[in-house]
Length: 175
Image (cartoon, rainbow, N blue to C red; front, side, top):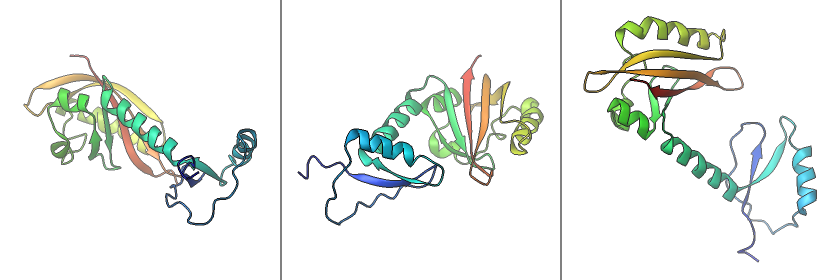
């Protein structure tokens, strides 16, 4: 019986942190598929809680990680001040920085000086909530000093208070 039992975690909906400690209490009967589906729909209202299969969460994380790393375009996540948190292998290959090096820089540091005013202006519009994202063509400075022309799509991911949690940028090398 223990092998067949799925480990479930409780997640508050929407976008709240999962509680990952399974209960040590006795096993309670689980709903049938249809009953669970009705229960999930009923509990999908904002602020409600729902049970999620921990294995499914791990599989989703693995899928996201694979997409992030295998993407043929550069992907970068940066903190609210623009300092890089994580970049994928395409980003590293195109710009020549490894994870540790890039974490010391922000997106303005690697933007070509000619494109900095436009980048600052567009980023400020997103920060102020005037636009949700921007698309632009600009040059980045590679680690070796050469520039590379990219199409950039950037947005700010926000929390419930509308504060920026992190920046997400997708960049395509067009040089």
